[in-house]
Image 1: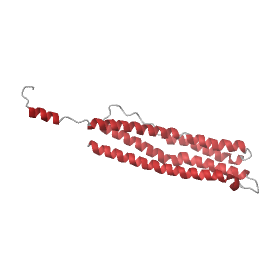
Image 2: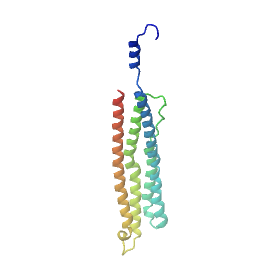
Image 3: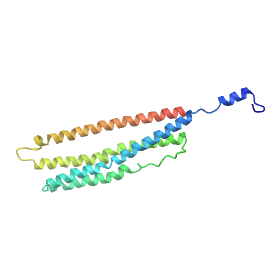
Length: 198
């Protein structure tokens, strides 16, 4: 035993040592930050599909129905809208990497910023991604209606396509609602972690 220290002093020092809880919390926050950043990146990369979908909805009918030139401005507008939308969807979405030596507070702030980025992306998608796709699909439906035969319109032959479009739109909004619930759940998890670190 060192000079001048009693067993009570050693016991007090041993009991006052920091526990491993803050280290585990820090590792959990770093893991959560990596997971949130990966989800944001997947969402941003997924937004690249909108111009491709719009281009397909534009190119296929223009090649199949070349006499429907009056619809060209609508298709071109949808394509330009979706390309401009890429800029607005991706603006501010690429976040910096969280430093490896970030503390609890910095890690929580980084996680909150990632969730806020995903929330902003979710809000922007309606205008800059779904909007052009719906315009292109609507123009495609108009092109199909124009080429329909006089005695048989779009409804008998185009009903399966229209049904798929309606199901896709409903499915889109169901997925969107689920993503919003997931963001709220992640915010609640961060709040719980922040309470635990106090």
